[in-house]
Image (cartoon, rainbow, N blue to C red; front, side, top):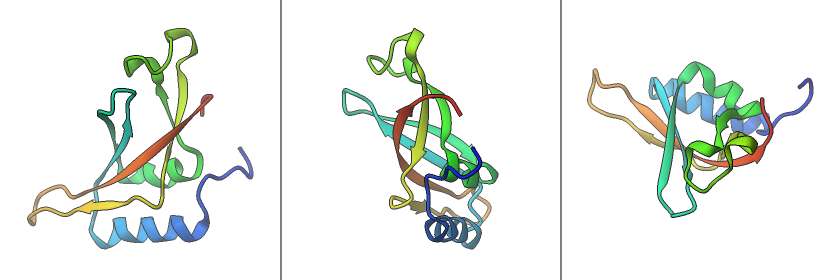
Length: 107
């Protein structure tokens, strides 16, 4: 994985700056299933840079109709153009939401 990156340094800096500015603790990553329903995974903020650079592995068979269990290793790619911060009251855990695309393979 030496030189492979999904996200430009500029986009990475923008999103990581947003996370730091709003003291974001969690990132909700959303993909829409074949029925049009949103499916989400939650990652801690310290995994976001890796997710933006390389993607996050997930089991595509866990989404009905998406992949067969024998061909279900997928990589979720956060779209750096879709951040939506949700900043709550002081003391609440703030999070940011990004949409995903997916590709075959494993991280």
